[in-house]
Image 1: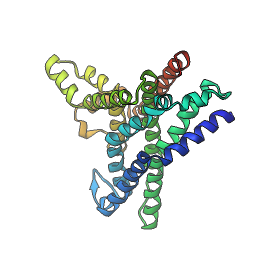
Image 2: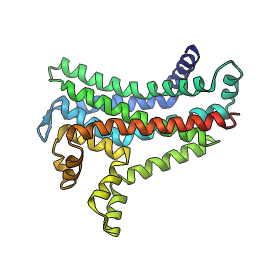
Image 3: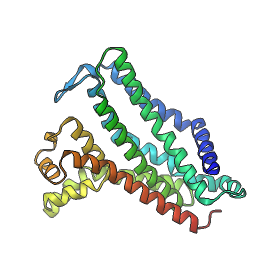
Amino acid sequence: MKQWRAIAWQDIKESVRAWWFFIYALIFGGTVALLFILGVTESQILGFMGLGRLLLTFIQLCVAILPVFVLISTVRSIVGDRESHVLEYWLSMPIALGDYYWGKFLGRFLVIFLPVFFALIGASVWGLYIDITVPWHLFWLYSALLVAICGCFLGFGFLISTLTRHQEVALSVSLVLWLVLLLFMDLILIGVMLQERASPELVVSIALANPLQSFRTAAMVLFDPRLAVLGPTADIILDFFGRVGFLLYALIYPLFLGFVSAYTGFLIFKRGDQI
């Protein structure tokens, strides 16, 4: 227990000193501040206003920004230690491979999730200070969605980090993965539907297999229970899942993908050549 906690703490300290962490924290903290300055809390969309409107805008920004930051900051975890011979230093000590791997995983998860979570807390505290009603149910649901998407792409990042031998390759693979998932949210699926005349159910199934799309749609469900912005597609989703069922799917499915990816990466790491 002490070994993986020591590795997690060491990874947290190294990450906090890195330049990417300051940019990462500044982007999400600055985004909340900017939304307040621009008066987003005073606008209204589909009945949502105040802090709920700000949280809605913030979570939509996270769809595009958060996954790529998670991947870029994570894919270098194992392969970076291998290239810099830090991994060789760690393994020269009486530390199990599982303690090293999962300690790194936990430390990186905390570094990635806490700045985003603190941005939400800061928005809520400021909302209370300026006498804006805080929709706590949305706050906790958004926090749970952020845990799910962070865990998902963290697992992808660790899998890529164990499969590659160079940081440049790992970064390239992570960017390609992010672009493919981003394109499959709209552009590629529209092309598939038009060219192949695929059934709407098949297209929706492919779309919801994309964790980015499930995250985005779940964020929509929270402020638009009938998913009016999706048109007829909403009927397929809500008839099959229901509102609560889809929210559970959007929470469990990305976490499952992340765990499977991270565990697969661990098996590859444990059986491969660590040095």
